[in-house]
Length: 400
Length: 72
Image (spheres, each protein chain N blue to C red):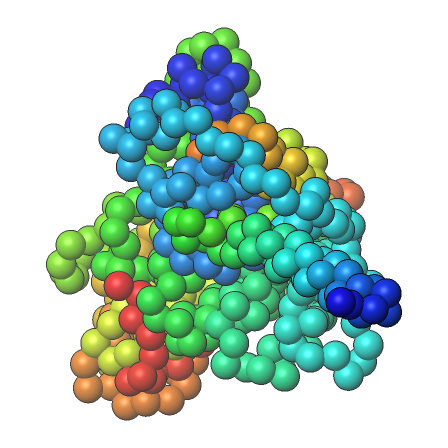
């Protein structure tokens, strides 16, 4: 709507339209911008550095001096805003002007949480991608100093998720990101952006809509124009594109079978495949649902490949008493090529009984898969055990 | 009749008063910084989708639509 409304003024050079995107994955916004043929400059604020922005969208009208004319700009105010002659204020050049464009110096060991937070955000926003460990470390220090600070918890979750999607990932980064976003929402349950970051990976009941429904349509439209769509670092999958559920219902469960109850299949001791379970939310109230995403990542050093001529990955989750499996999408279709190396994911949802006792619950699970070694090409059928861990807590924040 | 010393004192007082007024007028001219209507939008520095590091203040001098959004 705004794109079309301001286009004549932007094209005539009478106005600048600037976006600020509050999103974990800026590359998805790049694709969106390409699809919509937006020419605007767009700032990326994945860590919600602009803390006063707690919801989106927020359109703001600013005059040439930098004064806010409308903090909730409406399309019917546009014409008057453009017709008015705004005078430039006579203020010093450096007033309200950020001077640094590179990260500040590292804080001293006894610095406050706020100082560590500023430094971490500086490196995240202005530094290099390979400095992500510094960002996480500084935010862990800040979170230890003030664990109830929602902004710090959110930043830490964002940094962990960013590290998870890059070459410096650590095994628990993804699950820890969800935990820290949960703590952020706990600290500020009215923060829409904190809530959305959790909903992105959470149960379908808690979703207002399927967040990235537009991606496939965008790619088709872009290709139809003869362009190549921008590639994405992390393909939206499972819960990110799942249709929301408007009311609770239990679906028929297919594809889950305990094919190795006695544990006779050989374990993947070579660690050809890394299994990364992610439970969202990590704390859930009795009567509510959680969503588990299970990611299968091939070992990046030994470079094995999926044997697509054999069966799909199979998963068994030993659903304990007090839980109901309400949905699963465990069928991971093998691509047509006989050998591939893609990331694979499966998702399922569990509902916690309304009278379930509080406490930590560990749900055992395993996966069976066909994988081949790169050197020598030896193929195996392996089993790998893993667990889904969730805390049942009557005071856990709800995602709705 | 005032002595020359009293004249000098009076002139100094007037000059000091004028400087004081000038400073207070300057301070009053500086708008409050904040995100509400009538305030000066806080400057910030962030990366852009194109990989640059920019400040909001780099765009001063024109009318701006600042649109906070997400693609989801």
